[in-house]
Length: 290
Image (cartoon, rainbow, N blue to C red; front, side, top):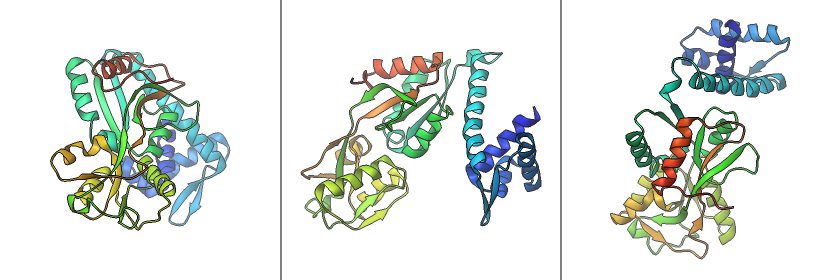
């Protein structure tokens, strides 16, 4: 299936925005990657990529093909799991936002694979923006994240109560939250967006420091490098150990429930159905509110 391989190569170029980077990721030569993309361009009779500085960018046709190609490749993976000699392996791919992947998700997965050793589970960690993009293209079966975008592309299977609180090192217990330095997650993070909304609600414009991951935010807060809005789940152990304290404000805690989600267009596999049932039976998630 030569065109299938060409599609896989093209999707890697589309994702990375670079022929060289795609070649390195796929362990191919740059000319081989260029030839694969050229083959697709001949097959579809259009230009898919164009030069952009040191990399490449997708044309309008390229963006359309990349979106459809991602869905097609996801369907092929789904077919491989559903039929053939490996159908009893019951593979499950879940993606979770960083906050959940660094708090309650690992214990949930551990209890699930212990109860269902026949299920092979992969966990990917993404920020909110990337997670919903992958879920919408069918590249993962289940997702664990906060409030989904207003879109029919996904459905809520179960929910978990989640409070966002402002935390800081014990020495910052009486800090003025309007002038203290705030630690922000990376662009695309739902917590970063919620923090910006909180600033608007409180009418403050404090200095900010961007920190690239949820774990780094916690570490920087413990080191008194700033305060942060963060899920109570993520910092419960730090609060219990006295390494962080909750700072009061008139607008917190903010309730931003965590949801177990699936693509609206995908039928859940047996492994996914068992995981959803396990998540509810253990009390980690509950039936969604309507």
